[in-house]
Length: 75
Image (cartoon, rainbow, N blue to C red; front, side, top):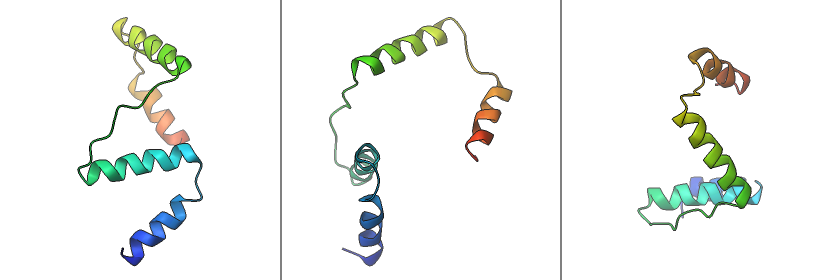
């Protein structure tokens, strides 16, 4: 293992478990390892269904709303 990869693992190991899992999935995907689908909680399923219904009704964020969200998060 390279020094850089060891450093990355060291930094990631201090993150919350959910973030560690997300990064691990991304790394495995980049390495060509298929991963099983993520299992959503009941609350996440409900949120997703609500978001899909909003999209179907055409309730989308405006360009200005998206820019404001990006700016809020420093992007």
